[in-house]
Image (cartoon, rainbow, N blue to C red; front, side, top):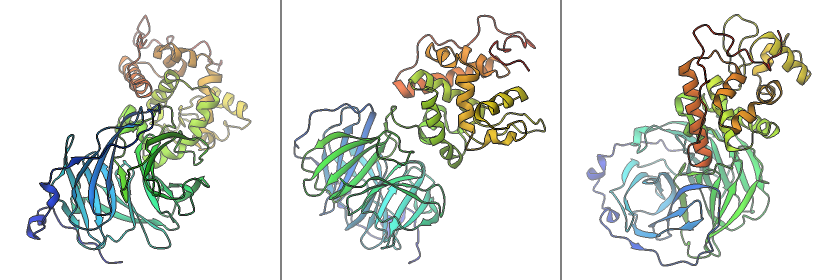
Length: 479
């Protein structure tokens, strides 16, 4: 492979590029036949960009809640033949040329007209990759060659210069897809020429996991784009239709929970490439992702991505078992776990105390280890580290939430974080109780679109310093 040479944006003038698109005025796209609006359960706007075969850039905003398209725009032609396209955000694109160059295209207008600034050269050689995709979590992916090599770079800025597309890693091979899109952090989706829909998980170099989400039904797909939340669009080449589907749980690696939403348009999508800005759509009813947790609680409160994502499938399975199944319960449960363990299944309090806090729920004290072990048929007293294992961390969190403390879901239903906190039994202080309550409110808004009313954050009588009676819970087993 040729070496890649990056250059700063100042070279755009030096090389004498003539960019017709920078000053061109776009025209609205011709009206397209649309299907009646369909409810998706999602919120936000999908910003879908496309490139036609003649190099013309297009844009269409799609209302994620109703699956209806706003005013589509047709801009100017890009000044070179385009090989691949990836939207980094609603106003930033990466484009590779058939000659192997990489450019950044900044959108300057997309309301009544579609305009873009002089494209910024990232590299003039070396970018001969077949497809580009971004995961919305700071990574750029590309495929190359007949053996389906997959590469990843770190994106170090929202509008990166050449040197800010860095740390290239060869993830592996065998990703033999004809279309590619990012769906969440380290997760991709693609279609094959035989009509399969493939899910691709890339937690690290040499650790690609591919799963068949659908064995048929995706033949003739000429473009795939995801705007986040499990919502994705496919363009059918023969009919030029754009169809919307939703994957309720993008982390489970199965396609039985993918539902057909309907057609955005039944014709008119002539683009050879499409890409949607990531993380602009939220589908609360879907599976919980790392990016969802960051949206709820902030980056500083959520643990390292690979650890958190490794635990999410088992955690969400246990939430189903424990009937943590409505916005209030989910919000209270997740707010508690992020406070206890930063959503890390393997969290360890540290120190020499044998029965110290471990796992999602920070199981603590010998009587809790004994009772949890008896429930699951294991000896946690002799093997306490099992409490922070991938096999048992989430089940123990569910056990503590619903079995050891039978009223926790009811407290959550009543928006009573004071009751939830008493059940959990942390060493109470006003600041921590406030933070947990605010995290509950933030998560509740994520799931419902609005903050909860009548949230109970504190006890009627605030504990006095050293008052241990307040959090000695009556449901707790005698030690």
